[in-house]
Image 1 (cartoon, rainbow, N blue to C red):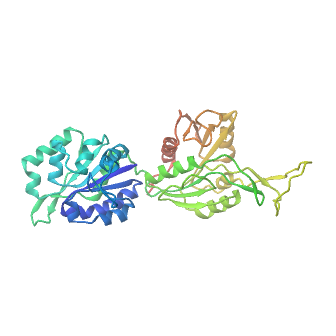
Image 2 (image 1 turned 45 degrees about the vertical axis):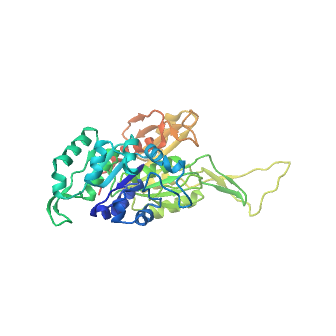
Image 3 (image 1 turned 45 degrees about the horizontal axis):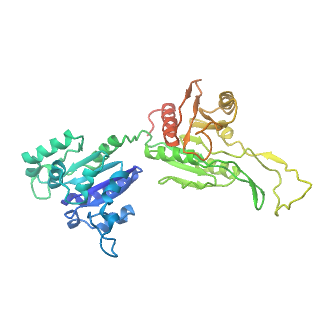
Length: 403
């Protein structure tokens, strides 16, 4: 999710640098917008280095190679359309007044008018400015419009005064962001190992057995778990899908390599989710050299690969184990049998012949089969939405306390 962080001119502007880091730890992409006053307290380079993005300062901003162009002149519209939240911290009395009046005299105030995303402001100013009737009226106007206002703290202020006006604590601001964006941290302290993608089993140096798994489901689970506070380890087979950010990532190729990596890195995991499409068979004797074409044909002898999920179930202990079942017929019967035979806590099953539920798509249609006999059919949804539903069930299975 994308957050535009507006930084306005006050001594508390320096605290916004730490806020950027905390927002990133929530899995959020942060775009910083600085007012002219903010640049008197902290440099653009600070935020550019932290976010890896250009810091926006003016509505009509040149690229450095010439005058402002059409793209820069309408950038506030582009930013307004792609963000999920506008957060202003610190928000000065001037910014609050401009927001309330609908004035648009810089990029930040113009963005406020242009965006339909929710808005959170964290005021910071002198106690007398905060208590002034004009400021309090502006705050009421903004609240009436649906703006979330994080009340300033009381204490010693930079100007030497004592009273309410100090920027709220970082955790208080983060709580508001989580609440508005509906971010949950209910898996904080839980280590979750997730497998993703296919495995590839060599036939010869240039050929291999594999399947159509894209890794999207496993990566969606990793993204959702990380945002909910879990420590996430992803063991992934080869896939063109970019690995999730802010997770431990272990690339593997074969089923044997995946089994070894899961054993080595999942010993202390509270939850293991086997979303990978592990090849069931491999060549019994892979050729050392490329097999040449033969008009008479050839016979390939296969042998089973390690059954990673069954092996984990034998040493299950208190871990929660989740398996996947991609079926083409009799999905429910096969899923129930797999749940029983593997001895796991949950099977996520889908019929890959259904439109929107197969490989290489961003949606899925699944049924959750639980060890207590419950079956939860789910409609077509994005893989990220399905990941959230799976994690909701995992959360119910975890013992408490979890941290």
